[in-house]
Length: 317
Image 1 (cartoon, rainbow, N blue to C red):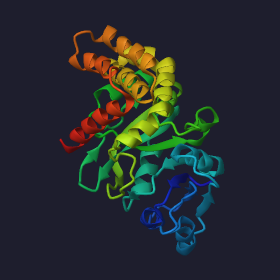
Image 2 (image 1 turned 90 degrees about the horizontal axis):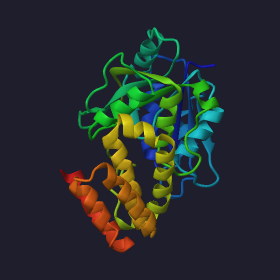
Image 3 (image 1 turned 180 degrees about the vertical axis):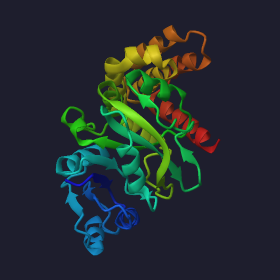
Image 4 (image 1 turned 135 degrees about the vertical axis):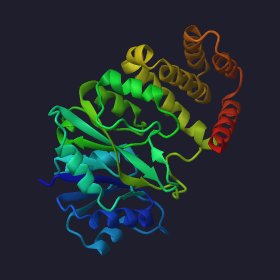
């Protein structure tokens, strides 16, 4: 049983995967394995992830491939099932470990005095030199469910951190089995387990992948995602809405607003208006709440165009 398993999903990004794996292999700390899961890459012109793993020739790196594309969270679950490590590091294929990154992670975890901690989170540095998350993690802070929600409420534009999670967490909590985003996983983990924060930077995140998750989606992509996102946010509000409303009201309002807007884009105007009314009940004097209500007068494609322009404008600010 190695101390760490690095969980690395990949899709059409073999050229980036090689960089990520080379930084693992170069580590002075050697008690690790990596499980790479190719989520049925479709770009025949791309560097094949399996070829990258074979060329590097390190027996600690194992390679699995999905027969059909299932999404990044499903790829993580496949890697979890194969993992043998005590602690699982969720390392994306465009991430890069610091030269002594695994040693830093090991030392921070080993020095933790709290035996019930099941997740450790660490800061990132991006390739522009910025630290994430912002505001920075408070070194040594421990989150319970309420503490995590209050942290979410106070975080700004950079929210990413490196997750290192004990393997027994996944006996009761898994990443979404569909194409849902990650929020429900993090909320459910926080409700069941405690997390310790570390300000140390052990990994670099890169912004050079054109298909990165944080890329600004256009109107057509927004319309494509809308039915699924509306359903996902409804589920999130059903399961965590009361706690969010009590301890993270701004975040709660954001999920209600997103549920309304995605419902409009999915062609479910009545459902969208119900969530817009829910938003107004909590924030009757907020101009953007009335704006969400008025969006319900537009057709889905027009709503998508408005949202796409707003996202692009915020990304440029």
